[in-house]
Image 1 (cartoon, rainbow, N blue to C red):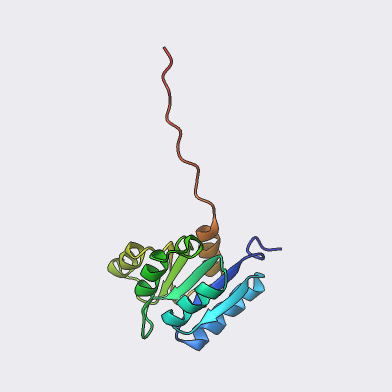
Image 2: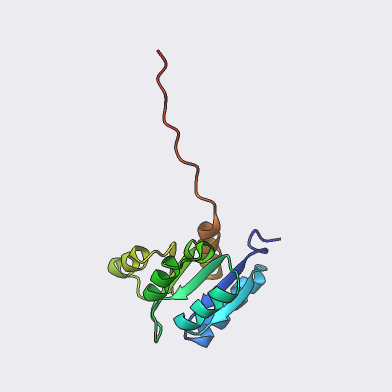
Length: 140
């Protein structure tokens, strides 16, 4: 059983073939999938259902992935604003990746992607953050 088998992911891409490909990868890992064909549709779904993560294409119409990510981060619902968001794009220049991360993306997935890359990025995004480092205390 996959470590991802209990999670639900929202796929957001205006390309139905990209959503279908990602769905097949995630379904094989036991992930429950919700889908949206646009940023506004994704925001409507996020208000109605709970998911554990979002994988969003960077270039969509009418709302791109950066704007969607910023809207997720600005949500008044902490269950939405704290969601891991993985940005996906075939454009992988440093400026593009940094733009996605600056908008609040948790990770970046370069297209075309392999099943291993998708699952690895998702597992990393869902992993709990490491505990804060303890400061040493000097005893005299």
